[in-house]
Amino acid sequence: EVQLVESGGGLVQPGGSLRLSCAASGFTFSSYWMHWVRQAPGKGLVWVSRINSDGSSTSYADSVKGRFTISRDNAKNTLYLQMSSLRAEDTAVYYCARVMDGDYGGFDYWGQGTLVTVSS
Amino acid sequence: SYVLTQPPSVSVAPGKTARITCGGNNIGSKSVHWYQQKPGQAPALVIYYDSDRPSGIPERFSGSNSGNTATLTISRVEAGDEADYYCQVWDSSSDHRVFGGGTKLTVL
Image 1 (cartoon, chains in turn blue, orange):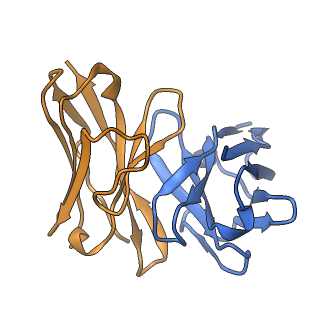
Image 2 (cartoon, rainbow over the protein chains, first blue to last red):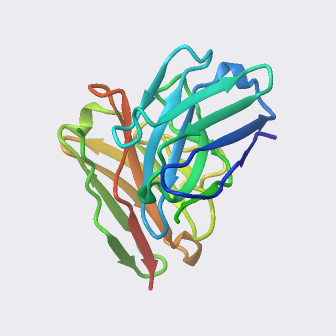
């Protein structure tokens, strides 16, 4: 059974840092491109970042570029999102998601999400 | 950047057909994916590559994409279909994924 389990969320002050993790199981993690998507309370889904299967290529939404870093450890079957210079507007549930077909298909599996709250 | 426009809400009576649109410039040239999100849950893929259904998704869910509009159609709507629905594409010019603003489907 495919499972994605996020962790690392919590309360952080503006300007602070946080690292999210997404532990993958039930599939060959190293074969899949992965994404982070966030959802502010009561709002819609917003794409954040993606990484290719071997970690050599990344892409970021303009709103997080230069502040967030996506990475992966295929030996540990884990995806990461390092977040720095956090702002109140980064408050959201962060989901990791697997792409079904290279980087062209839909996101066929999602984690349950981890809440990040940026507040003083 | 590429923009996807969805109606904020759609209402439909049980047993009827719901159509949720997703507008974008020449969206017919892109592959559209649709997600269903129920309260307190993660999103779930219901349509990929415009019109394909993942295993386990009822045949009542279908999709189409042409010109400047993609459409998610839900036939014989049930109370359990009440949820938020999001369209998504890959914008090749920016190498970004883009989501529509979401549509709340209400079953009357």
